[in-house]
Image (cartoon, rainbow, N blue to C red):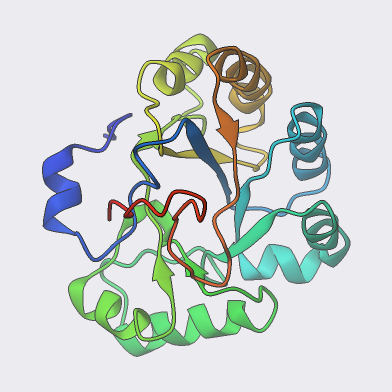
Length: 220
C-alpha cells in the first residue's frame, strides 16, 4: 500500500528529511528513481527538454556502473543526480553498517550529497548515520508509476490532483514503470506548465531548496 500524497503529519514527524521545496513559489521538483536505464532515461530527458524542465535523478549505483553513458547524458543535460543505494536496498531489516557501505559504494559512481532511500524506508539509526554526509530527500507526491496494476490515467491524476507549489514528485525511469511513465509524464508536464509551474532540479550539493531572489524558508 502507498499514498499518492504524503500526509503533513508524517512530514512533521520526520522533519529532518526534505519533503518539499519553497511553498511560496509555483515551482515543482520532479524526481526520477531507479535509473539510469537505456531507452527509458533518454526518453525522459527528451520530455524534460521539451519544457525546458530540470529534474533530479536518484540513481541506483549498479545501474550507473552498467550505463555510464546514460548517467553522463543526465549530467550533460544540466539535471541533478542523487544516491539511491548501490543495489536498491531497503532501509528496513538490513544491517546498519552494510546499508551505509552500500550507499558509499553508490557514491563512488554517483557524485552527490543527495540521498533517497529505496521504498522510502529508512530506520532512525541509518538516517542518523547518513545525515552526516547527505541531505535525505523524500517527497510529498508519489505518481505510483511503478504499480503495473495501476491505470496510467490514475497515475497522471495522482500527480495533477496532489501537486502544490514546492512539491517534490516521484516518477521512476525504470522498465517496470515505463508504460505508466510514458503516459503520465508528458501530460503532467503540459498540464502543470499551463498552470504556471516551472520545473527545477534539487541542488546536488545538498544546499537547501531556497529561491535566492526571495529567500523563503524551506519546509522540511
